[in-house]
Length: 221
Image (cartoon, rainbow, N blue to C red; front, side, top):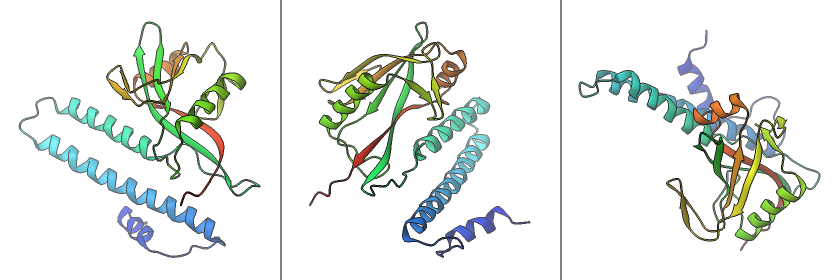
C-alpha cells in the first residue's frame, strides 16, 4: 500500500508523465502538482496547530478553538483553489476567466448576501488585471444580458432561490460591514430565499461570488 509520505515524494519529482504530449499539457500538470504540494503543506500546518491547541494549558475550550481552526483551514483551501480552470478556445489569445471575493451574509432577516464581485488593478488567479473601466463594462453587461445567478457554475438558479437585488460600482474607497472596498470595485447584493443556500453562506461554505468571461490578453511593455 502506498503511504502518504511516498506520494509526497513522488509528486516532488520533476518528470514528464505518460500521456503528456505538449508544453501546455505539461504546464497544466505541474500547476496541479504544485497545488497538491501546497495542500499537503497546509494540512501539515493544520495538524501542528491543532496539536498546539490540544496541548496548551492556557486554552480551556479546546473543541471551540479546533472548530474555529477548521473553518480557517476550509477558508484557506477554498481561497487558494480557483473554481474555474482556464480553457483553450479557438482563438488562443482568448481565455476563460474567473475571479472571486468574500461573500458575507450581512442581513439575516432580509437574507441579503453582500460581496465584491471584481476589484480593480488586482492580479487574479491567471496573472491578469482588470481596470475600473473593464469592471464597469462587465457589471453593466451582466445586468443588461443576464441577471441570472448560478451555483458553482453548474446550476442556474431561479429567482425564488437567489436573485441579485443591488449592484453598483464603488464611487470611492469605502467601508461596508467592516470590509474595505476599493474605488471602482463591483459590489453586489443577492437576496437568498433558498434555505439550503442561505445556510451554506452563513456557515462559510459558499464564500464568494465568481464571474466568468472572455478576455483578450494585450502585452504591456
